[in-house]
Figure 1 (cartoon, one colour):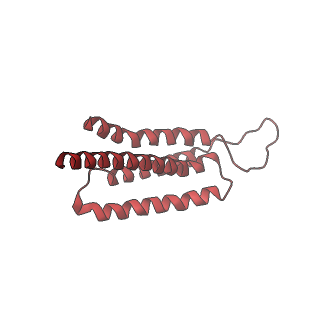
Figure 2: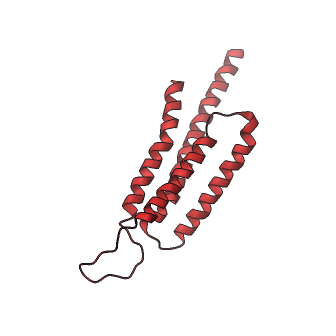
Figure 3: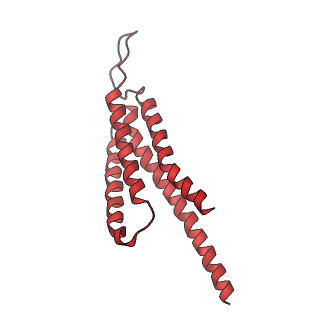
Length: 143
Protein backbone atom coordinates (compact mmCIF):
# COMPACT_ATOMS: atom_id res chain seq x y z
CA UNK A 1 0.00 0.00 0.00
CA UNK A 2 2.80 2.41 0.90
CA UNK A 3 4.62 1.77 -2.39
CA UNK A 4 1.39 2.44 -4.32
CA UNK A 5 1.04 5.90 -2.75
CA UNK A 6 4.73 6.61 -3.35
CA UNK A 7 4.36 5.64 -7.02
CA UNK A 8 1.17 7.71 -7.26
CA UNK A 9 2.94 10.76 -5.85
CA UNK A 10 5.93 10.26 -8.15
CA UNK A 11 3.63 10.02 -11.16
CA UNK A 12 1.44 12.99 -10.18
CA UNK A 13 3.92 15.77 -10.92
CA UNK A 14 4.84 14.50 -14.42
CA UNK A 15 1.16 13.94 -15.22
CA UNK A 16 0.31 17.50 -14.13
CA UNK A 17 3.19 18.77 -16.24
CA UNK A 18 1.89 16.90 -19.30
CA UNK A 19 -1.54 18.40 -18.70
CA UNK A 20 0.06 21.85 -18.50
CA UNK A 21 1.84 21.24 -21.82
CA UNK A 22 -1.48 20.31 -23.42
CA UNK A 23 -3.09 23.42 -21.89
CA UNK A 24 -0.25 25.60 -23.21
CA UNK A 25 -0.69 24.09 -26.68
CA UNK A 26 -4.43 24.76 -26.50
CA UNK A 27 -3.80 28.27 -25.18
CA UNK A 28 -1.70 29.06 -28.22
CA UNK A 29 -4.91 29.19 -30.24
CA UNK A 30 -6.29 31.99 -28.03
CA UNK A 31 -4.35 35.14 -29.01
CA UNK A 32 -5.68 37.42 -26.26
CA UNK A 33 -6.61 41.03 -26.91
CA UNK A 34 -5.47 41.72 -30.46
CA UNK A 35 -6.98 43.83 -33.22
CA UNK A 36 -9.20 41.85 -35.58
CA UNK A 37 -7.61 40.74 -38.84
CA UNK A 38 -9.20 41.13 -42.24
CA UNK A 39 -11.39 38.17 -43.26
CA UNK A 40 -9.44 35.09 -44.30
CA UNK A 41 -6.28 35.98 -42.35
CA UNK A 42 -5.21 34.36 -39.10
CA UNK A 43 -2.53 35.08 -36.55
CA UNK A 44 0.50 32.76 -36.66
CA UNK A 45 0.65 30.11 -33.96
CA UNK A 46 2.98 31.32 -31.14
CA UNK A 47 5.39 28.38 -31.01
CA UNK A 48 8.03 30.23 -29.01
CA UNK A 49 5.59 31.34 -26.30
CA UNK A 50 4.12 27.85 -25.97
CA UNK A 51 7.57 26.24 -25.77
CA UNK A 52 8.76 28.77 -23.18
CA UNK A 53 5.60 28.25 -21.10
CA UNK A 54 6.11 24.49 -21.23
CA UNK A 55 9.75 24.99 -20.19
CA UNK A 56 8.69 27.17 -17.25
CA UNK A 57 6.24 24.54 -15.99
CA UNK A 58 8.91 21.85 -16.56
CA UNK A 59 11.39 23.75 -14.38
CA UNK A 60 8.70 24.26 -11.74
CA UNK A 61 7.93 20.53 -11.84
CA UNK A 62 11.57 19.54 -11.49
CA UNK A 63 12.16 21.90 -8.57
CA UNK A 64 8.96 20.76 -6.88
CA UNK A 65 9.87 17.12 -7.42
CA UNK A 66 13.30 17.67 -5.86
CA UNK A 67 11.82 19.60 -2.93
CA UNK A 68 9.16 16.98 -2.19
CA UNK A 69 11.37 13.90 -2.26
CA UNK A 70 11.71 11.91 0.98
CA UNK A 71 12.68 14.03 3.96
CA UNK A 72 16.28 14.33 5.08
CA UNK A 73 16.53 16.47 8.17
CA UNK A 74 19.90 17.96 7.17
CA UNK A 75 18.30 19.60 4.13
CA UNK A 76 14.84 20.37 5.50
CA UNK A 77 15.34 24.13 6.14
CA UNK A 78 16.98 24.60 2.75
CA UNK A 79 14.16 22.70 1.07
CA UNK A 80 11.51 24.81 2.79
CA UNK A 81 13.34 27.94 1.64
CA UNK A 82 13.52 26.66 -1.92
CA UNK A 83 9.84 25.69 -1.88
CA UNK A 84 8.93 29.14 -0.52
CA UNK A 85 10.99 30.89 -3.21
CA UNK A 86 9.42 28.79 -5.98
CA UNK A 87 5.88 29.40 -4.78
CA UNK A 88 6.57 33.11 -4.19
CA UNK A 89 7.81 33.44 -7.76
CA UNK A 90 4.82 31.55 -9.06
CA UNK A 91 2.45 33.72 -7.05
CA UNK A 92 3.98 36.87 -8.53
CA UNK A 93 3.60 35.35 -11.99
CA UNK A 94 -0.05 34.51 -11.28
CA UNK A 95 -0.77 38.10 -10.21
CA UNK A 96 0.84 39.38 -13.41
CA UNK A 97 -1.11 37.06 -15.70
CA UNK A 98 -4.47 37.79 -14.08
CA UNK A 99 -3.92 41.55 -14.21
CA UNK A 100 -3.53 41.70 -17.99
CA UNK A 101 -5.11 40.27 -21.11
CA UNK A 102 -2.49 37.92 -22.50
CA UNK A 103 -2.57 34.97 -24.89
CA UNK A 104 -4.08 31.77 -23.51
CA UNK A 105 -0.76 30.03 -22.91
CA UNK A 106 0.35 32.79 -20.49
CA UNK A 107 -2.23 31.62 -17.93
CA UNK A 108 -0.94 28.04 -17.81
CA UNK A 109 1.74 28.53 -15.10
CA UNK A 110 -0.87 30.11 -12.83
CA UNK A 111 -3.29 27.26 -13.31
CA UNK A 112 -0.41 24.81 -12.81
CA UNK A 113 0.42 26.50 -9.50
CA UNK A 114 -3.21 26.52 -8.42
CA UNK A 115 -3.69 22.83 -9.22
CA UNK A 116 -0.49 21.89 -7.37
CA UNK A 117 -1.52 23.98 -4.37
CA UNK A 118 -4.92 22.31 -4.22
CA UNK A 119 -3.34 18.87 -4.65
CA UNK A 120 -0.81 19.51 -1.89
CA UNK A 121 -3.53 20.86 0.40
CA UNK A 122 -5.67 17.75 -0.13
CA UNK A 123 -2.61 15.58 0.47
CA UNK A 124 -1.89 17.50 3.69
CA UNK A 125 -5.45 16.96 4.91
CA UNK A 126 -5.29 13.22 4.14
CA UNK A 127 -1.88 12.85 5.78
CA UNK A 128 -3.01 14.75 8.87
CA UNK A 129 -6.12 12.59 9.17
CA UNK A 130 -4.09 9.37 8.84
CA UNK A 131 -1.56 10.51 11.45
CA UNK A 132 -4.37 11.56 13.80
CA UNK A 133 -6.14 8.19 13.43
CA UNK A 134 -2.86 6.34 14.08
CA UNK A 135 -2.28 8.53 17.13
CA UNK A 136 -5.75 7.75 18.48
CA UNK A 137 -5.24 4.01 17.89
CA UNK A 138 -1.90 4.02 19.68
CA UNK A 139 -3.41 5.91 22.62
CA UNK A 140 -6.29 3.45 22.78
CA UNK A 141 -3.85 0.52 22.85
CA UNK A 142 -1.89 2.08 25.71
CA UNK A 143 -5.02 2.57 27.82
